Length: 423
Image (cartoon, rainbow, N blue to C red; front, side, top):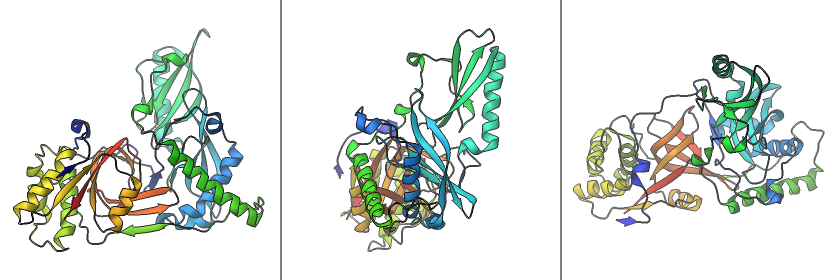
C-alpha cells in the first residue's frame, strides 16, 4: 500500500445519508468552473472588465460549451446580459447572461468580471436562484419579517455571487429615524438570513467569508485559461473581423477530448455508504476484466464496508485503499494495492482514465454535478471518464445516487482525495 500524503481524515468522513435537496426548482443540469476567489492583488488581473467585453467572452464560449451533449443546441444560440454580481465590498465579481435559442430562454452563463478567476464560472440549462420566484419571494419575506421585528425599513438589494451555488442578496436596512444604515445577508439557496443580527456597513464587521468554503486555485491555471481564450478570440478576430453585427458574434471550432471507461457498474450509496459503494464500483470493473473471483453487488459493498470500518454510513477516505487490498487478498488476489493521493491533478485524472483504470474520488464540500440540483457535499464517487476542453476538465462519475453518468468540473470542491488501484 502506498500513501502519498497524510490528511485530516476526520474532515473527510463521508455520510451515507444524501444531502437534502436545497433548490428543488433549479436546473436538472448545472455545471461550474472551479470556485475561486481573488488570489492576486496585481492591478492587471484585478481590473474589472466591462460587461460588453465579458459578453464577447460568453458568446465566444457557446460553441465550445455546445460540445457537451446536453448543451448541443447552444452552438447556434446567443447571449443577453442579465445580472451583475458583486462581492461584499461592492466590487463587481461576475456577469450573468441569458442563453437565448430561437428568442426563447434556454439557460445561463456566468462569466468572471476580472482575470483573477476563470473566464467562465458557471453555466446551466435551468434558472439562477435570483430568477426563481418561489426562492426570491421567500427570501424577501425573511428580510421583511426581520426588519419588522427590529423596526427597520428595507432598502435596496444587491446580488452577491461567491462561487458556484453560493448565491446571496444583501439588503440595506434603515432605522425609522434615518439613523444608521445596516445590512443583512440572505442565502438564496436556503432562504435564510446568514446572521441572527443585522450587519454593520463597516467592512470590519462583515463576518461572512466563503473563503473558508471555497478552494483557491493556482494562478498559473487561471492565467492559462485566459491565455487560451484570448488566443482563440484573437485568431477568430483576424478571420472574421469580429462580426459584431451578429447576435452571437463569434464562431469557433469546437474541440475537446471525451474518454469514458465502459464496464463500470452502478452501485448505490444507500446500501452501506458512499465510500464502500464507490470502491465496489471500481472492483466491479476489475471483476469483469481478469479477476472473476471478486464478489459483486451488495456482497462486495458489505465486505468493503467492514474492511474500512464504515459506521452508520461514515467512512474515512484513508481507509479505502486498505479495504480494497484486504478484500482482494481475501479472494485470492494479492497483487492489488491502493494509492491514496491527496494532491490529485487534472493530468492524473486523464492519465488514469486513458489507462482504463477507474478510481475513487472523495470530495469534501463538492459542488453540483450534471443532472443534480443539490451539492455533493462530503461524498465519495467513482471516476470513470473525463471530457477535456482547452484548460477545462470535466470529471465523469458514477455518484452512487442513481444509475446514470454525471460529471462535475475538476476543482469544484473544497478538498479532494483520490484512491487509485494498481494490479
